[in-house]
Image 1 (cartoon, rainbow, N blue to C red):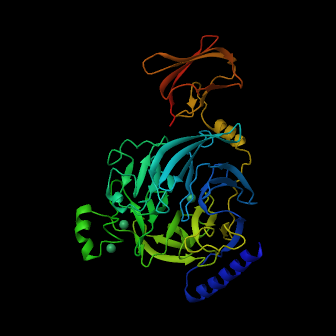
Image 2 (cartoon, helix red, strand yellow):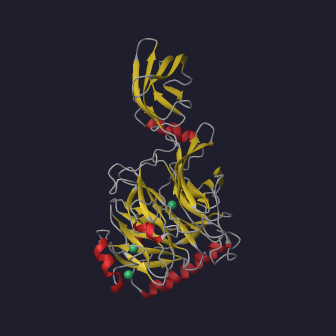
Length: 482
Ligand SMILES: [Ca+2]
Ligand SMILES: [Ca+2]
Ligand SMILES: [Ca+2]
C-alpha cells in the first residue's frame, strides 16, 4: 500500500474507531487500496466479462484495467471527442451483454460543442482492436455540461440511457425530445417496441442525470443534479414525469402545486439542498460489507464523498444515509461493484469545474474499498479476449445452423457439424432475390463458417448453407449499419 493509501486507511480506521465508540452498530473495517493512477477524468467504470475494469475517460480513451495489478491496457481512442472548458467530452460506456461473442462497445460522447452521439464500436477479437464505429444516434443535443449519459442493461434486455437537458430545460417536458430523459432502446439504438410515447423516451422531466442503476429486483434508480437546490435520487418508472424544470425536488412549494397536479409528477426518494452534485451510482447487496447490503452507493463531485443510501425492504424509500471518504480523494465520479463484492471508485479531479489544480500526483485515480477481513471469491481476470471468446462459444449451445452476432455488422458466424469441410453459401433478401452467392469453399475452422457481409445492404435476409452431401442449414440474418 503506498503512503497516501496508508494515510487514508489510518484516518479511516481512526474515524471508524470514534464512530464505533459512539454507536452500537457493527462497522466492517475498510481500507483504501490504490488500483490505477495517471488517468484523466475516468468517467465510467464497467465490470467486463473478462473480470477487468473497463474505463472510459473524458478524453475518449477506453482502457481495460487489471483489478489486481492495476495494469492499464488501451483498447481504443475515440477520434471525434469534443471536450469543452467545462465537462463535456466522452462520458458513458457499456459492453454488449453478450460481449465479446457479440463484440460491440457502446459509447456516448459529445462530438461538437452542442451535439452528442451514441455509437457502437465494433471490436474485432481476432485483431484485438476496434475496427469500426457505427453511429446509432448521430446528433442529439449536447452542451458544455448537462449531458447526463449513463447506460445500463435492463432486466428486460433493453439498453437504458440517461440524457441531460443540455441547458434547454423545457425540452425535459417535451416527450418528442431526447433531452432530459431516460431512453429505452434495443442494441441497435432503436426505440424499444412498447415504450410509453412511441419513441425512445421511457421517462421525462430529468435535468442532468449522471447516475443510473438497476437493483436485482429490477428497480431503476437514477441520480441527477439540481440547480441551486434539490439534487435528487429517483425511482424511475415507465412513462412517469420527474418534474424538471417545473418542479424542483419534492412537490412542497405552493408555486409548484399546479404543475404537480397536472404532471402527476413523481417525488424523489432523496433530495439535497444545498446541492452536493451526485454522480455515478451502484446497488450494493453483498455480504462483504453487511451494513451496506440493500443500499445505493452514490459518488459526489462537489461535496466529495461516497454516500450510502439505505433502502427499506420494498426498495421504494431511503431510510437512512451514511457517508465515507469525505474530502479524502477529491471529486468522486463513479463507483463500481464487482460481482464478488469488490468496490472501486474513480476520482474526477483533472477537470476545471472550479476545482482544477487541486489534483494530486496520483490523479486521476481508481481505488478500491476493501474489507481486509473478508475472503473475496476470486474472479480470475482473463488476459486475452480471444480466449474469453472461445470460452463463451464452448459454453453456448452450439446448435448447427445458429448464426451470430445478430444484428450483424460486417460478418456472421454459423455453427456447423465439425465434419463439414466445404459449403455453398447464398443470401436471399426479404423478397426472395439472391443478394449474395458464393461458390463452394472450404471452412477455415472446423465447425464454424465465417461469412463476410461487408458488401450487403442493411436488411433482413435468409442465409442458406449447403454441404456437398446435401445437408442444409438456413437462418435469418439481420444486417444493420448506421
Ligand atoms: Ca459505471
Ligand atoms: Ca425531480
Ligand atoms: Ca420542490
